[in-house]
Image (cartoon, rainbow, N blue to C red; front, side, top):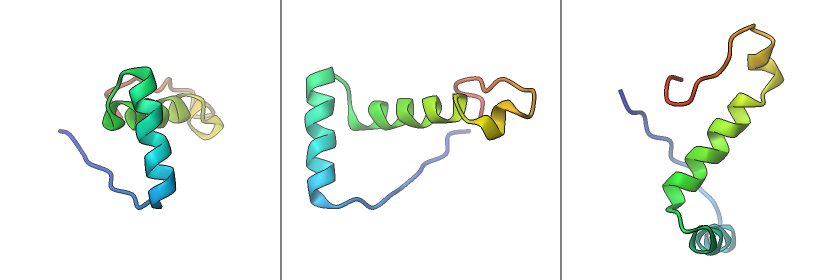
Length: 58
């Protein structure tokens, strides 16, 4: 099941994210998904559970 996350950011931050996506050749959705998954994979709180965080199975 796919879940959606919605956040509010100001116009300047949104513009910078769009520029970053253009330079990396990805969509805003792909960029934010990778940031979130990397953050979760490196989270000490989740690592201390003794379970590896697997992409796509959160």
